[in-house]
Image (cartoon, rainbow, N blue to C red; front, side, top):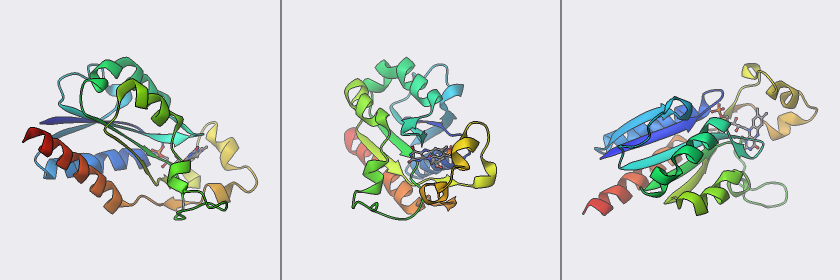
Length: 177
Ligand SMILES: Cc1cc2nc3c(=O)[nH]c(=O)nc-3n(C[C@H](O)[C@H](O)[C@H](O)COP(=O)(O)O)c2cc1C
């Protein structure tokens, strides 16, 4: 079974998550290709799809949004899972007691629920390194008090990421039997 893991990433954190998902699917006997969304011309020819993006200002990156827009029919017709990477830090609830991962869901999860009926959606914690920031992000990154919202570090939870990939492999295996 062939799975396409398509991703968009600005500074590499989401790329690393996509690579790990691909590796994990391969250890489960699936053929997984991990490709940046903007490098994909023809998305057909796969049995299942995993699409993920970094979240910036509550939205997926443009390359991922364009990918879904252009390939919505293919994604809707196959088992598809979506993920995002974003929240920084280790807190599970914010100062108002709200679930951090739920609150970090990109707008696209709601939009794509109708469009492609994904089998699952998942928010993963991300990574942020102040010195890597470039372009327009620098305006945000240097705002007073921003370090509380964008704490520096690599908060990716590899066991959670691998567990999610395993659940996809399980679901695809169950569909085959
Ligand atoms: C300017 C800026 C805006 C961000 N906005 C959000 C956001 O709205 N929600 C979120 O969960 N994370 C946000 N983040 C954190 C990033 O999504 C996180 O660092 C992510 O893992 C980066 O992935 P990448 O390295 O693949 O681009 C923001 C980071 C920066 C620098």
